[in-house]
Amino acid sequence: MIVFDNISKIYTPTQFALKNVNLRILPKEFVSVVGASGAGKSTLLKLLIAEEKPTEGKIFLDGLEVTSLGYGELPKVRRRIGTVFQDYKLLPNKTAFENVAFAMEAAGAKDSDIREDVPEALGLVGLLDKADNFPHELSGGEKQRVAIARALVNRPEVIMADEPTGSLDPITSIDIIKLLLKINELGTTIILATHNKEVVDELGRRVITMEKGEVVRDEEKGKYVI
Ligand SMILES: Nc1ncnc2c1ncn2[C@@H]1O[C@H](COP(=O)(O)OP(=O)(O)O)[C@@H](O)[C@H]1O
Ligand SMILES: [Mg+2]
Image 1 (cartoon, protein in one colour):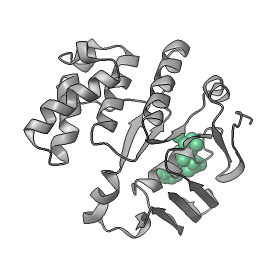
Image 2: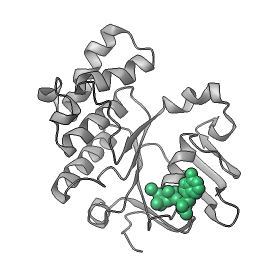
Image 3: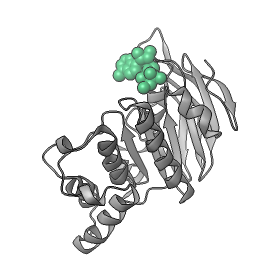
Image 4: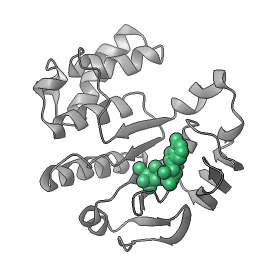
């Protein structure tokens, strides 16, 4: 379970980026975090992977207190949470295969496991036939699939996706969300920060709505309401 316990974040003294946020996210949930630009969605996700520290409050990933980890301990949380971003963050001079393999190498995986698991991850996202393509030889949707394969190849408990469809057309966006749903059905918790109303309303899953750093709505089978 992920717990945000009374989290506040202030970057600049005059304004709360997050204010008294309390959340519990259960294993295998699919949660959308919605809200206008600047509402605090990305900050919430950055705190979860300890990319930023809260001004106040604690965050737990099961027993692990994310907010008290020292720099050297960050892999403890990073290897348990896969990340997906709007701009894909692929390495341009590595193929799809190599991009996914790189995440395993960084985690210290054996070559034999890499040879087995990378094709499996690329297969899951439907991109085995593009394994040897470089990012510039892939469409936006395909690039995002590689990023998702990279996020899941180390079998994290959680995948957090920050505006993963922000650069994609509506049809491709729906494909990417369906892929995240499939991964969720295989047992991974998904936290999706998005602007995409169509996507969220179709999902019929939990929706957390943020406004100026505060959680103003948190509904099972929620809708995108701002
Ligand atoms: N690194 C930063 N330094 C200063 N202010 C920031 C920083 N990152 C975000 N903010 C501010 O925090 C608030 C929340 O931003 P963010 O979490 O990016 O919102 P969202 O992802 O919902 O658009 C905004 O007012 C934004 O300007
Ligand atoms: Mg954001």
